Length: 208
Image (cartoon, rainbow, N blue to C red; front, side):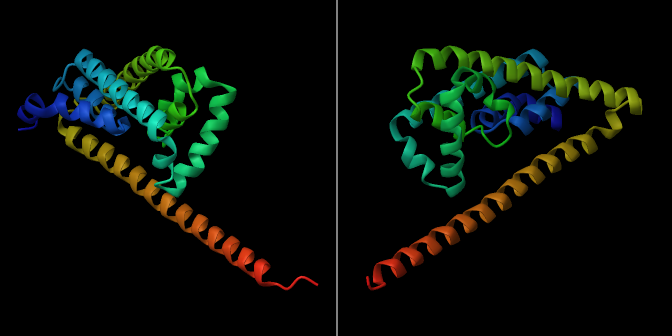
């Protein structure tokens, strides 16, 4: 059942997953490649194209609508402002490495586009970064499977447990980030409300 599903939809799901975010689904695909449900070379190629296409899209959206996109979420706004500071200091390094910093996958390409980074240079360095990311993460997950098999013997009877654990870990990180975003949004809202009250109070205080 698992093998049939992966043959029918596995690579398409991998492309969509890496297009929008990517870490968890690429790790799963790398492990499944070790178990021979998927081909490790195809996993790396599909992950590269998914990641590359997604980040090109976010970059061009950043060039055209960067401020509007970042303003949609308080955390994005704050992270986008910080990202712009980093990009202006070390632009090429960040284009190559932002995929390896958890939580920056969407915000950083938008900020890079907003910063005015040259499209042709981004096209090249984004491709290099996507290739390094796809190969490194897929190979790490593949060799994780080999290590697990070395420790447990035949991993076949444990594979569903390992897949479940990886899914739970990915979901846990997502939930943690959601709670962190909600807490940060509340703090920013309260700070803005306090600033508005102070400004209103200052404007109504009679000048002696």
